[in-house]
Image (tube, rainbow, N blue to C red; front, top):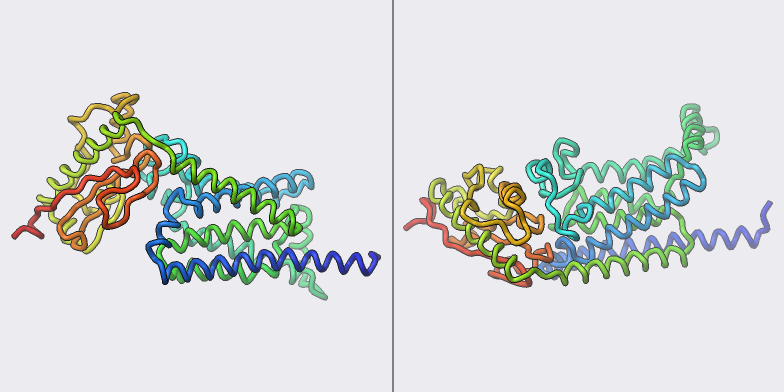
Length: 380
C-alpha cells in the first residue's frame, strides 16, 4: 500500500492537470463566442485558412499523436496506437497534407470530387458525406461512450457483458480519457450541432485537439511544454505561410488567368442570369459551376493563355480544367444581388490564403478581377 502522502501528491497532480485542461477549454470557448458576436470581422479573419488558429489545431493534434504513439508503442497498446494515428491523420487533414504550404496541385480525383479541391479524405463525399457529423461521432465515441463503458465495467457488481468487454479492452490496450473531460467533449459536440457562428467548426476542431492532448493525462509541466511546442510551431508556420512571394512573371500570368476567368463567367452569365438572380454567392469557381450558378462545363476560359512560367502545357491544362491557380489553390467567385451587379474572381496569391476583405477589390497578395454583370436579371 502506498504512503498516504504519496497518494495525496498524486491526487493533487491529477487535479492540477485537469484544472489546466478545464481552464484552457473554458477560456477558448468563451473567447471565440465573444469574438464572434462583438467583432465578427476579426473573428472571421482569425479563422481563415493558414492563420494561427488552423496551424495550432494541426500542431496540437500532431503533438498529441506523436506523444500517444511513443507511449502506445512502448506499452504495446493497440487501441492507444490507433488513437495516436487518428490524431496524426487529423493534423495532416487539417493542413491538406501540406498542399497550401508547398503549393502543389493535387490529383484530378481530388480536384473534381473533393469539396474543397484539396488533398483531403474528409472532404470526399464518397468517403465522408458530412465531415461535421463524422467528427461529432468520434468525439462521442472516444470522449463520452468509452469513459462511460469503463465506469460501468468497474461497477460493483459489474454487468457480465461489460466485464467481458473490459477484459477485451485490457487485452487491446484501451486507455479511456478521464471521465472529468466528458463535459468538454459534450460541449464540443453541442457546439458543432448548434453552430452559433460561421467557422464554428474551425475553432471546435482546435478544442478537440486540445482535449485529445489533455486525455493523455500529462503532468502539468509536461502539458505546458507540449502546448508551447505546438504554439511555437504554429506561429512559425503562420509567419512562413504569410511571407511567400511570387515572381512578377508568375503574378502577371495569374492576373491574366483571373481576368480571363472573369470575362468567361460574365459571358456565361449573359446567357443564364443565374448568378445575378442569386442573393449571394461566394464559392470556388469549380463548385459554382457544379452547383449551376455558372452554366459552363468544361471551363474553357484559358484557351488563349500560355502556360505560366515553369509549367508545362499539360500541367497547366489539367489545373485550369478545374479552375485552380498555379499554387494549387482554387479560384474563387463572389457575386449575386448583394454585390450590386459586380462579379469578383480572385486567387489567394502565392501565400495561398485570403488576404482581402469582403468588400475590397484587393489586399495582401490576392489577385482580383472585378467585372460588372450584364444579364437578363440586371439589365435595364
